[in-house]
Length: 322
Ligand code: ACO
Image 1: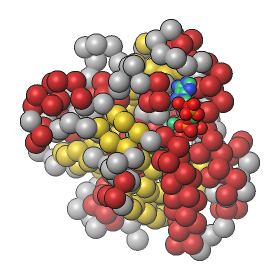
Image 2: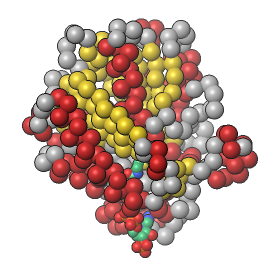
Image 3: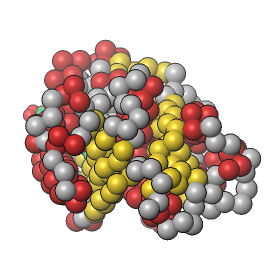
């Protein structure tokens, strides 16, 4: 039996830290409101000339180093992003050129905050089928570019960053199952209005910002994440005792705690980075994973439950042996 195993992780955060105190000076908000409603204390913001691909490249090189894999050994490059550098080529192709390795397939996946779980599902299928032996999967975003910095309901929530993993074919257990879903009926609750096929002026004219009915999204997210973790445990015939670490999407610490509570997992078995990263969309799960790998919490052989929920709506989970 062939599994996909994570053999290296990497992460990249822009240098610029944006604190809640600074946001207090920009919109009608308070550090207290942001911390108690979301758990966020600060987030990182890309420099004006820093792009999603710049962050993706740094995270990717770190993951490749950690795995001991040369770029030339890759059979597949997938980038999950909602904030690509260009309409085309894909950010994955731009990244491939920077890594100096033409030839292998490279493409982007767009499933907003669930992008990394969608990407892991796709990569896992390629590896299990024997088509690919070594793949690079990156979640990278510059969400700050699509924020309305006068809208306090959204601009305090998001940040920029990238996380990456190298997945390799192995006879040892790795990814045990992935589960992805979507329900396209919720565009009215969470969207960026403006896109290329609506006419370039609409984007250039400044309408392309995140708008969200936060409290309604919150309710659906909590319920949906509750059911996807059940689905994942059931599919593997295991209970919550078979989870060493929950590595959730980092949108709001209250959503994360609700999922942990549902699983009856103590918070010291949950990786939380939303306090210092904010919501980095497709980068959030791999950044959280990389943080916990690098600080020694996540150890080889441990079983991880990854989950995410985002616009679409899209949602997904993965159960794996690290
Ligand atoms: N500072 C101060 N007050 C604020 C702020 C702010 N930054 N933002 C909103 N408020 C006010 C609102 O105007 C409202 O005031 P009112 O009662 O006078 O009308 C009050 O705070 C409560 O607003 P709610 O929206 O009900 O607050 P809630 O507790 O739901 O928290 C939040 C808002 C943090 C957005 C939460 O709903 C949330 O996390 N939602 C889910 C986000 C998510 O998971 N999104 C999916 C992934 S993102 C993606 O896919 C791109």
